[in-house]
Length: 124
Image (cartoon, rainbow, N blue to C red):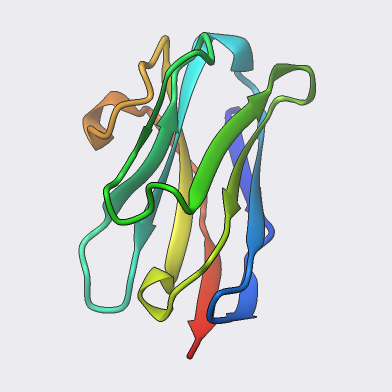
């Protein structure tokens, strides 16, 4: 059974930092591209960042470029999203996702497995 477990969310002040983790089990992690998506209050789910299964390519939404960094540790079967200079508009539930031999690009359809999400709240 594939499981993706996000952690690291919480309440942070504007301009603060958080690091989200996504621990994967039940799948060959090194063969999967990983992505982070988010869904804010009253908004549709949107792509945040992705990393290819090889780990050489990363992609970011324009709104987070220069502030967020996605990475992966295949030895730990874990993907990370380091977030700096957080803004109130970053408030959302953040989901990690995995796709077999995925490129890490932003199409949600390319991801087969999804976590339950972790709440990030940024106060002004």
